[in-house]
Length: 183
Image (cartoon, rainbow, N blue to C red; front, side, top):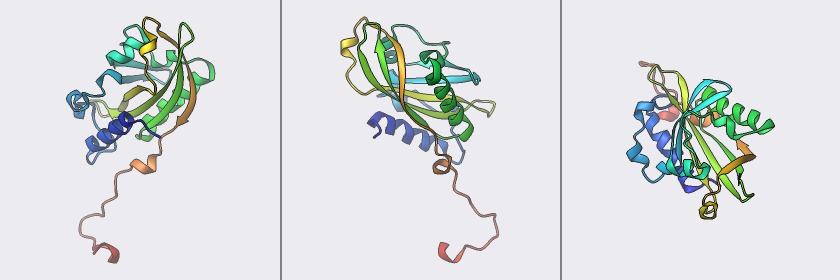
């Protein structure tokens, strides 16, 4: 089941698409998502192995106890998890549809917390789909993590995009009569 913040982000993303496959980065207004800002991030694809933080919310940075801007999101992951996360991000961009991932995050002292991540694709000003607006949502309270940064993530589940769910409804060419069941 999706966290309420995850549902909010996906609904907002869908509302900003209008008639496009994905919304443009310029269509996203931080003020519209003020309740989520601390957990939001934006990635820019440089190549398949480099999805770099352009922005990272304060809660996300606090959990990792470092500024994440200009860092590679894939550096959170190791081994097969890194490859799976790379494929998930690439799939979100290629299918122009949201995807989700779940992970266990671990602090330097071994404390653990479950995380839900949502990835929604965005188009750059040039029109290419190369950005991701994401949510990094802890599923339990992270208050006990004070002064202990998250240093490790282990993927527990991936939900890749379902492109058919997000396709733009087809409109018939002008001048064609409606089908009998459309009247």
